[in-house]
Length: 139
Length: 208
Image (cartoon, rainbow over all chains, first blue to last red):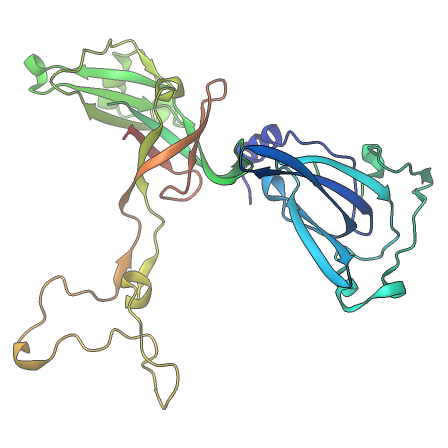
């Protein structure tokens, strides 16, 4: 079990606050990439297929298809290199890890869009109230 | 030479400005009041004795210890530690209290503590022996030491021959741990990497 003091420390360190999102959602992640002296922002749009870990080590995996090839990127949620996370679409899924998408292609990878949760209408890209949070461990 | 007493709280991680993920150990440091300053004239050597207050109360103190620490105005201590002063080092005032702020200008520290006890362990865990083959007809010799000696020397086993035995629960020191963060308000120190012992253990933190 993690000590309370360590837990509190992580809470103070976790300064990145993003809109609440969960597996099945379509997100656009802007990630800062250093190229020599300069820096550019790379965007990656895809479906969130899972979230792993807790505290500072929390990560999420985004999957997309590029020219028929599946590409997955795993980002640390608390990384200072993430410039922005935008939610494009909320997905209706019934499991926490959408690894089944790896065996599928084309139309069968579609995820039904979720327009509300617990009777509360969802608006893409906005932080949800804590009561509607699907993930209490998320910062 | 600065030396402090701290409590290992556990491990977590941080991101640095370049976005690198750094594993850190959190240590609660002091404040460590000075109990006694030993002088060359009186004690034959120069040293400073510091205390970790901890959870012990006055009831836990023996009378001699109680008398010793009362000179510094303390009621109860959990751990006392002493560190020597170099010849050229200035005297330290008896009333000073060491805190994590004293580590402020340092880049690295050494941390000593008692390692986790492993009990009676075999040669594979204790000395990284390779053990025996897993198959090819091997029976009951999968994790053994193997031969202790062979050839014309075969009279007795040399002292210090690496065998199975007790491992851990011994003083261990990790040198040159980079300081990742200092929180003066909460008396917290974060060093990069692991330190000996389990969470809750008392450790010594020294200038390296």
